[in-house]
Length: 275
Image (cartoon, rainbow, N blue to C red):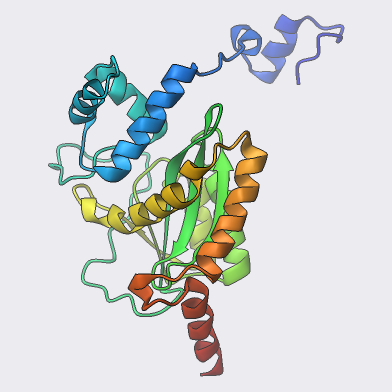
């Protein structure tokens, strides 16, 4: 840590810790309110029309009175970690250094809890600023097993959520994610290998693989996030913890025959343990 009271100069301290002096002096500027409102609206439109790319979103926003261009919308979408969902041509290969694994869910009937888990990251607007939310879900029961919040798109908060899920619920047979940098990181892959999971990753052009997790984000945002303007990360964490308790334990899911995820998950786990 750089200390101004230290006898060594700030320049020398930065050299010793491998930090540029300009990087230490830099003070990040807060995101302007107008841009936060724009990002919130882009997030809402993405949930309503996930197939809209930057061009269509920019056109829709201009209809609503926003003075914005395609490139600006594209920049904000990249910052928010979202992209249009549609079938894309396989025009590029994954980076050589990335750990890419085959897609294992094609034609697979998911009929048991802990058979397949899935994880994804979503943008989370707040009263001032924004956060990123990662959630780990059991696909069969729809149960949210763990979640974490972060103000940066690093792998650390995803690994923390994974560690909690593995500690509390054991390990799934298959863990499926997209090919994002967080889910191809060494730390993430090593955790899954150590747990004995088979690793599955969505392939290029497999836009339908995101539909299930997009339903979760839609539920979380329309039933919780958009109804409250979180002041900070502490409030966001508290309210989301309460919401996921409700989502897992009391919210009836039509796709589950109006049962809760907890009822499906724990009933199946008890039957497996009895067997």
